[in-house]
Length: 253
Image (cartoon, rainbow, N blue to C red; front, side, top):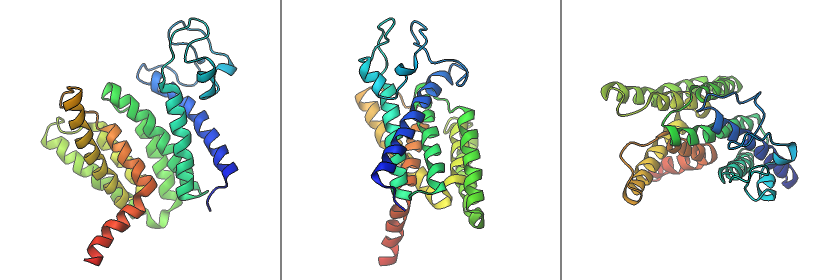
């Protein structure tokens, strides 16, 4: 069942509200600050933000991207993350309909956004993100328990391959966080779509990072998490048509 336009708008509102919280996580998790109890405040002057300064996207526009108290510039990241989360929520529900699986996928998308930004900046995937995704994965398996082996194989298959690379290269070829990420994502996607997500992540990582190395003179070390996340999101949205197309090449041949 596809959502009506008014439902899509409501989903978008939920998405940008949660997106506002994602910005809090992105800023505070690397600093090991509390993401729940500490009030929202200006990172420059410490001014405690009022409720009308916390309206997703709109507050940034009304304040013209600056703190009302000290006038310091507010990062464009805030409305981008809020809007992106809202758009992806609507996108997921349009593809998968009004189902509990769509809710799980949306939670997964939000966690991947936080993880991608943090990993891109720090080269570390927070353990809490993988734990959160693992819980979502367990719920996904329980919801489709008759096919539980698909998810178990999905969890062990890709992560087992990455673990082998980790052992052979003594941790230089892949990070431990990436291994754990693909293990918990396997519980959400199942083996077919998890393999697809991994392959897409490798392709995106290879192409985009080579371009960044050439254009921006980046070194060879890359944060793999954002590329894996992009592959996972593509698999969530279009995993079935892509795999059906790929399998069809062999059937028709």
